[in-house]
Amino acid sequence: MTTRSAKDLVAEANREVETLSAEEALARLGQPDTMLVDVREGEELAKIGMIAGAVHVPRGLLEFQADPGSPNDKAELGDGRRLVLYCGSGNRSALAAKTLKDMGLRSVAHVAGGFSALEKAGAPVDRG
Figure (cartoon, rainbow, N blue to C red):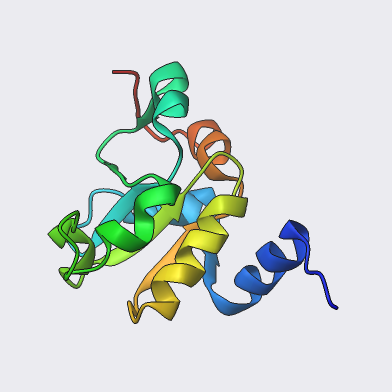
């Protein structure tokens, strides 16, 4: 039996989805055709904040909030805007971006280095 590690899954996701640098993601921040999506858990947001203007969709609820047939649907995820996902370091966002791509969303990318890279690059942070 073959066992695939989390590292293997992240590497596969990174091969299949577009990865943006923090600077590339910042250049898209605020553009009407782009939505920044924070896939971290609520506790992380409460502790260190989130990028101003981002939409919070926890990784554990992503599939349900991206599914128009789900009672938990977040319609803005399917409104045609480019979705740029981030997490703490870039691993969960890679997996999440691949999931959205697998669900049929076409314009999806994630940020290498996640929240810390965005903050270091000068992204505005909403500390709540």
